[in-house]
Image 1 (spheres, rainbow, N blue to C red):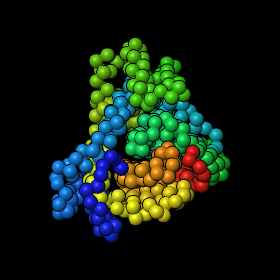
Image 2: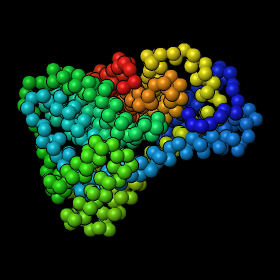
Image 3: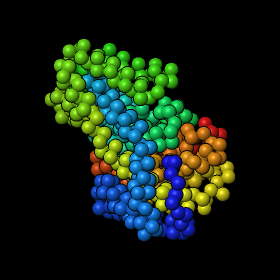
Image 4: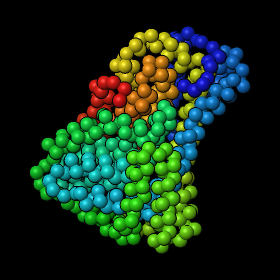
Length: 451
């Protein structure tokens, strides 16, 4: 995982029992008690610490393991803070509202399910949040489907598929940044490499939704309300595209993600200030507390009011706790012992990829938390990928293909519970139609080589 030397080598059976205990603790609190993941993570940290002390490992070594684990996430912490700034600055400059408005304008014709998928994918990429996309524009689409007597299961499947495409491919997404940071791969290289599985999954999913779509004209007052609210926000300007253009240009020139996001945020802030839409002091305050919309339309305000460094604190604390737990699992020899027991069997790319996929999916099923599926799987396997001479970008992509997009398909997961609540469609009802989410792990197993 980290540059941590285990202080013991327990039998794999003992290591497996303790890991199962940790998973049970986390799963019980998240699934059964429905607590935030932070509480069981603290309890898991205490459990592994007690185990280490019983094994006569000095507390100083255990503490060092936790600290070293958390240290590997410092890069992600700064990037997450900058992403919070980028979101708020893109809001106040009109960049994200313009992208949303463009997506809504695409609604037309007869390919309802396909358009729902495409538009949620576009907006999800702009927002970098699958849950925000689903809880806003996704709810509007579900309302339209209900009013038109269309299948809510297929509609919800299209919303979830599109939202998680955006969550997977957006440079604003915390899971995308987390996967690239944990595996130590450049963010934009990671996004580019994910295209090998994500774009085919997108095209196949779009075609399926075209086939499933009804042959009738669509429309609806809810989307009209969204568009009116966006127009009345005073944020729709031609120059709102400039921060996005700069982001794309710097990405093409392979400028590091931190510098690219910082430059785009500064341009967005400068654009907002010169436009006179807000005072300079108010704009700078959004960097911390986020942008607060006041269009007079509650649903639109909920869509636009987000961003800021403060909005990332929950994610940052979760990442640091999970990494600290990972450090403990390594310094106590638990994960090294388990990896050693299976390492001799991972002699090919296909076997290693399959094992990585099953581990990430298993973490989602047992724990129900996509962050932990990425963190624990990534840290557990990246050394093995190095020893096998396989590019780490392959691991980063596999983490997203089998970690990020699987979480909404688990009824007791964080994403599954949230989506079922806001969309009003049970997970097992929309699961057969979340084609994009199901295709990604299949395609990552089919792709050969270290692309």
